[in-house]
Amino acid sequence: MRKWACPAAAVAALAAASPAFANDDVIKNTSDPNNWAMQQGSYNGWRYSKLDQINTENVKDLKVAWQFSTGVLRGHEGGPLVLGDRMYVTTAFPNNVFALDISNPEGPRVLWKYSPKQDPSVIPVMCCDTINRGVQYAEGKIILGQADTTLVALDAKTGKELWKAVNGDPKRGETHTGSLTIVKDKVLMGTSGAEFGVRCSLTAYSLKDGKRLWRAYSMGPDADILVDPEKTMSLGKPVGKDSSLKTWTGDQWKIGGGSIWGYAAYDPVNNLYYYGTGNPSTWNPAQRAGPDGKQIDQKWSMTLFARDPDTGIAKWAYQMTPFDEWDYDGVNESVLLDGLEVNGAKHDVLAHFDRNGFGYTIDRLTGEPLVAKPYNTALNWSTGVELDKSKPNYGRPTVVASKSTFLNGPDVNSKNICPAALGFKDQQPVSYSPLTGYIYIPTNNVCMDYEPFKVSYTPGQPYVGATLSMFPPEGQTSTGKFTIWDPAKGEIIKAIDEPFSVWSGVLTTAGGIACHGTLDGYFKCRDQKDGAELFKHRLPSGSIGNAMTYAVNGKQYIAILSGVGGWAGIGLAAGLDKPTDGLGAVGNYAGLRQYTDLGGTLTVYALP
Image 1 (cartoon, rainbow, N blue to C red):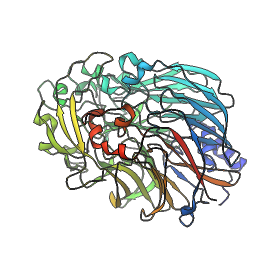
Image 2 (image 1 turned 60 degrees about the vertical axis):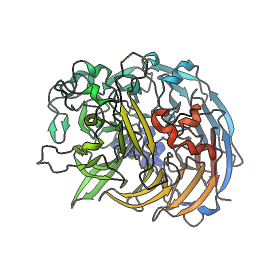
Image 3 (image 1 turned 90 degrees about the vertical axis):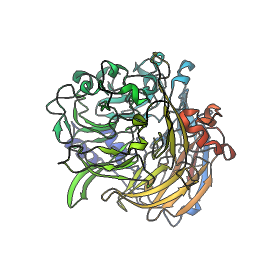
Image 4 (image 1 turned 30 degrees about the vertical axis):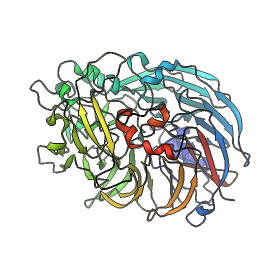
């Protein structure tokens, strides 16, 4: 294994060069590939490690080094953090946190355990499953977002509570299922709850003491959503005054949805924070029509935002799916790539694989889309995204009328819409490898029937208004694919079938491998060049966690959380049997019962 030292002088130089642009401790810790110091791996969201002791030649020899049971059922998303010889592991509800001493290669020692006291009444308000996407670390603090929206800072050495802040009210349907990001002196935290008619938001808290610093709602007045009518841009033009209010009927924006729970990215050079917002409430589009009974955009749901983390003010906003009719949340993560050549010109871009099935390459300084192509050929709800700036529908998808749940109307079952509401990709993060220039996408190969119906709003009660059934595309049996993607061209290099959705985040390394878990309970490592399977091992439960890697005492390890659940595994996690339960997921994944069951376990691999 190459030694990737991070000399103190180099770190000091980096910190001195950008004192106003990043948290120096996060930069230092993520610059050392022996660590896995944040959930995304690094601010750019690559989920790539420079470690190469484990590679394409020897990965077949991996053995289980040790395992650790979390003692918690339900879905385990996210993954552990490693800083030096300390590991921090988070569970599904009740969101226990373990600090482990991993210096002994034979197995860890528990240093401390933090067990939050939460009211279990939050469980039925959470969508979908009681997952948590992991803690973050900076400046000696472990930062935990609890299901009940409590944000907690723990002393990383002792587990002692340092401060708490409350971000929302579960009695109104506000919960926390998302990821956190530490930028500069702030912790950025989103709100979940669109399925309960919550007007969701992104909030910045002080890393030092938990004080609330700013909040940006997904929709509402300009002062609430923190946009500058003249300086915040959308598709190259100022958003203008009341950009959100003009696209809602009456006060419906007050229960507008726009959940924020996906992984986020940060560009320290340009001081921009990138994240997405989710679906508008309700799932019945007829109830969200404009005063004239026609479609209306419902900004800024389904939107990628670039914000200044100091002030919260948005530099740009790009709405992928205006007037959403299919629950195609725009929350999926962004991957930041510098100097990518697209159409003969170089751009600093972000790559984003939306639930709507399009893989976007977007100029991350302007928010203008450069590439928008399906990353699964089964996509059929749209004929494409218009990229000609001279066209009136620039940046917008063209909807196929027969797949429009709005045009078909309430109480009509719109058939065979691809992708399903959970998208061709949901929460499971992609990985980018500089070795190939490709992005590795864990995907869902799932379509749906969608029948909207009228629903009334009551605070704290479900506000969905649609019945769904999910199934593979016509003529196919696999509900998952592992896809290799060229972000410059918007081309699928290769798509490999998996029996079930790949609901696990991918890891790539300098050893040329790409690793991930599977819903039916396997851990796999593949060759980055062609996706060929090089290693496969049975896990204790299906995995919806994210593969990660680290090194201790000169030895590289690869780890992954298993513990089936999440939206795809909600039937197992919550004991549901009706095919349309779990917002339509239960029937599609009923076969999982033949392969796996519940139980949270961390499995760690190493070479003999």
